[in-house]
Length: 65
Image (cartoon, rainbow, N blue to C red; front, side, top):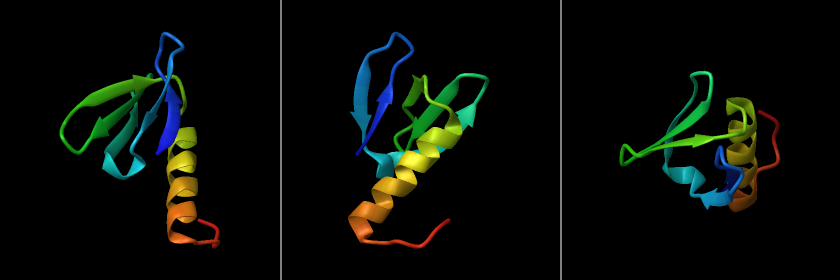
């Protein structure tokens, strides 16, 4: 799970393993596997970094990407 922020400033947590796409259009849009689209304040780069960090913590990986 990763913490992100809605455009109105409310933080929430999303399951990083269910993210299918991350796009900047210019807002950052997370498209989930079920097709739901969520607009967040974080950049695409930050969302990816958080998802990678989450995956490493779950799988115990230490190598750099």
